[in-house]
Amino acid sequence: MFFSGGHIYYLTFALQAFCAYHSFSRGTLNRWVWIIIFLPVIGSLIYIYSEILNNRSFRKPNIDVAAVFNPGSKIKKLEDELRFTDTFTNRIKLADAYLDAGLIDEAIDLYTTSLTGAFSENEHVLAQLIIAYFEKGRYDEVIPIAQKIYKQPQFARSKAHILYARALENTGKTEQAENEFKAMKGRYSYFGPRYEYGLFLMRADRNEEAVTIFTDMLNEEQHLGSMEKRSNRIWFAKAKEELRKIGA
Image (tube, rainbow, N blue to C red; front, top):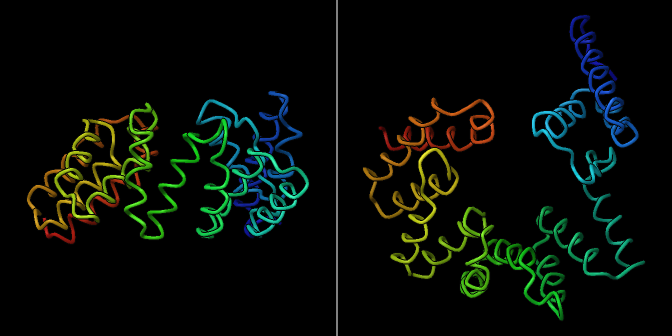
């Protein structure tokens, strides 16, 4: 159960003990105890991130050990729940799990058949459909869906917005695509969309402009707080890699 080596053993035990005590003091131990025990390092890190670093609790920390080691078990459980109770919530939970697992066609089928009645314009489902259609290369179907939720506040900084811009590019609407990427720019923020804008510029053989985008991102990194650095480190790493490829 524990890693070999005396020091690592004691560090792991101390980490578990800290998380267990913290969870007990907050009254959430019943929800976290098995994760902390059976996944001593990973489970403790998940707990620290969600309960301490984020300074908030998951509404439902439904992270079970079986799902970590066998992702298919989560899908099987959700399929059983849907067969037992066919509700909009259960359908979308299963569709989201399908999408996460790369079962795109199954996800699309559930999403599209769930867009009925009071849920016909559900923002979450439409945003997820954008992701699913993009993954299948169905760019023409991405665009009208994105336009339905374009004015929603959550859309501006979402993955769906990035994929909308890329769908415009992939359907030959490059000027519109660039306008969308520009709309997602902002100093000390929007690092994911800015990285994607840099890639867009590289695909258009505008490497000098791409270098400016990536360099600005890295220059801003040093002025961010530790939380912002951690949450965006993937984009900084990717920006460095693209600069390396360009030779800048």
